[in-house]
Image 1 (spheres, rainbow, N blue to C red):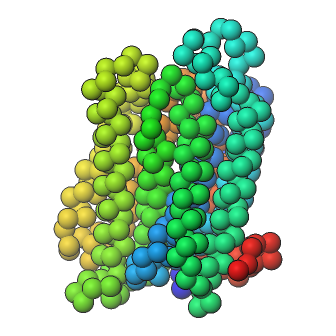
Image 2 (image 1 turned 30 degrees about the horizontal axis):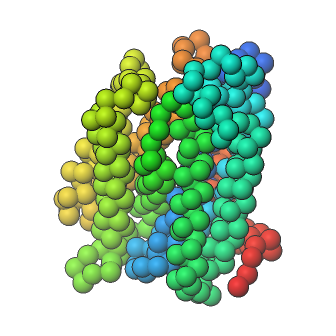
Length: 375
């Protein structure tokens, strides 16, 4: 059982969120386009945590293992934040013309490569797909929370397997609509899997950070005779990190080898100016430092080592989402940085407050039992 010392962290996060929302109100009046660019990035980040948690719960439902038993309370709390995370997407869904290049009123001004995709990239169909993805996720979340409910949890291999298929399809559609379509010239068959892997890395990193901060996971027994629970969780995160690195590298390699101008522009944009600095931070925090740490057993058996690995991976995940989503939108300026910080504080603070509250008070998750689906 994960127990936070008191409601202080949740109250602090809620206060940050409230202040951020006040800043957002002022930002909406002065520069709505900048506000929505930052808000969408924060909202996508918030959506990714419950989606990654759901994927991890389904993987553990198929494989079993002590790593999943330890992570389950945190992953369940994360999953329960899904409705709030989806609500955070609504401001962007209300004004897609300020964010997505294909949603402009006069489509005749768009390049031919974008106009050829307008049968798919149009606002009504975009909203229908968002509603379909949200419905799939909410039903899946209710089922997963029911199947993994404490001592009464049920093993449904077929259910978890089907859930992973539906999850993969919905995440792919969401990734194409809300991220890849920010650069509609690009075509990538691996982008959906890349986003799904990033979501899993984010959820696993946050879970390991919570476990290391609240339990002596470095000393608890793991699945093997000579391994600790912290090692098991860290090794799982290491595997997810390698998957993400492989997919990111393969996407770059295919685009580089193909030498296609429309596709290369995606990387040119993200390696210019401040975004090149962000890219190096991602490489350092999400790959180089964790890779070295995950290979050292003493680090994985150390409380401080686990905290450092999880914090680095989580920070890298946040920067990686920022790099993929925020870069193609309106160029950031020092004069509007307060609007962007307010958006991240507002959306992020609210989500974190709800997550911490659900983590400390698991009985609040019973809401899903009243509205959920039962076997």
